[in-house]
Image (cartoon, rainbow, N blue to C red; front, side, top):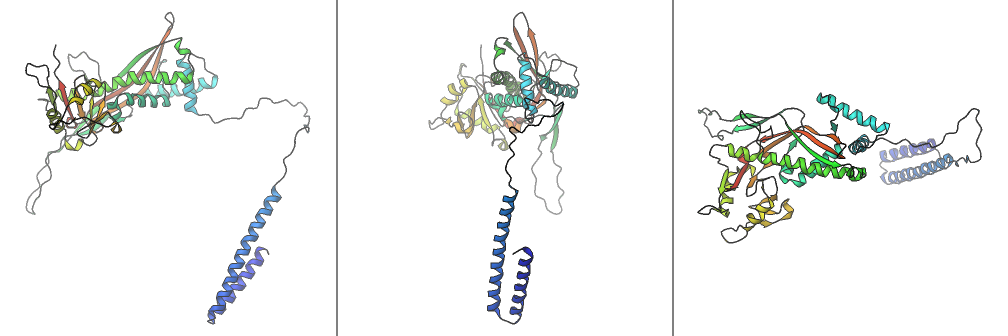
Length: 418
């Protein structure tokens, strides 16, 4: 049965069904409809059988070319045919970059990719320097990740990567809350004020000397090695900037431009309302207590408590915080490594961070209370010292940061004498 025959039989049966239904002969019409269903099922089987048969017809045996070569006049023998593979530019550039860092020569393809990416970068920042080298994206990403793992306060900071200067709007005065009025009353003017936070850019650099003997390691070993070094050195500087960076120098200042740190902003406020002092070495000892931690918690605006953390050095945590007890004699620090720190105090994770001054305890919501922008991502410079047989690797970036609101932070500070 072909398709035409199938359609003719089906249409004939449908016509019979229509006539039976019109005459009120429902039982016979149901029988005919079952015949139509059986016909449809049979046609599906026929279609499947035809498809399988056609597939067998199309299947042919492979051609055996062995021993059937044909001589071609003036022909040339082609050997070593290599399959063309898709080029992963990021991976190719990473390998080329690593070779340059290790003082190895590049192939023509590697040199082309290396020059292409660095030329684009130099054109974008309008520099004529011939020694500045773009760090591969994969390596840069790992540097940021490792730096964040080493310094929790850097990990908690929401960093943006906007080229050039960045202006962020911030609240200066939230004004009074809304009030209820009747129909005849005029609404009072609000005192809400918006200010600007300008992040321009501070140059961050760190030089790492590596001996020529050490440079002879494999590329697979060199990349994680240089990544870890840059993450540790650059991460330490960035974390320090977030905590205690001095900001932009004023008249008479001799320090270089740097991000403004949280502690710097808190200490600059009139009366330092967000800072609590303790002095265990005073004539009348004033040690760190449960009450002082509670007072510091009260200084942070409620809206910023969710997402806040407690930062201190390992020594301060284990020689001060871990020894504190509440008024019932229970330890204030509750061990909890699942929270991202070593434990919790008043529900906030306690994190070891060497960027905080010894004896100081910084409490706050860095993600919402601090802004940091990377104006220019990390690049690297190299300088060879032939006689001493080592190479300087100087990492370089332009970064800026500042406090959005001091109400997101509180500082407990130990008086250092001597």
